[in-house]
Length: 175
Image (tube, rainbow, N blue to C red; front, side, top):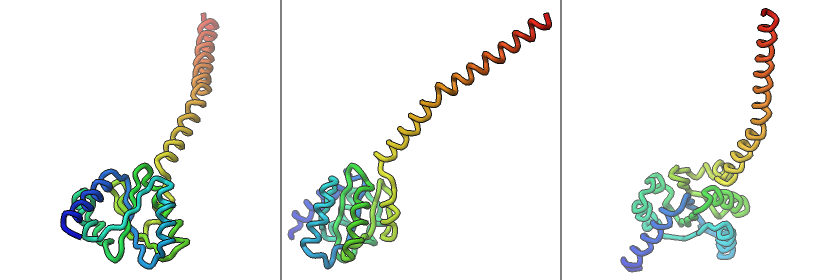
């Protein structure tokens, strides 16, 4: 591969890294073509892009995208990159499930919204809730809070009226 081709790949990968909310580095050495295609299909269903790139080019793309150099340690052997654009947790869930079914695929490292995770933390990332789930939970809490507000306001008003009534009765009795 000639220098202009390499430069073009570095630029494309760096652009994907900048756009992605998460990138996951994997090792796929020993996987069959069919297994690799199954992985790509699973990732594609969730809008996740998977690309195999030489480690030297990935390193240059990481530098160009201004990501953490902590990812450099993972750039050994073969490397595939999963780019998560919409949901930064979805790739972790798919990769975790796939690694349980296929021991040839190994998780190397990830950068999720700027935070770097090493190979031991895939299971932890996969158990995190995604943005949509968090929004749903927050909406549920807000809805529940709003539903209880009228009763709370009614109770406060009722108590205020009761106190004012008692004050009025005491004033009437003393007068």
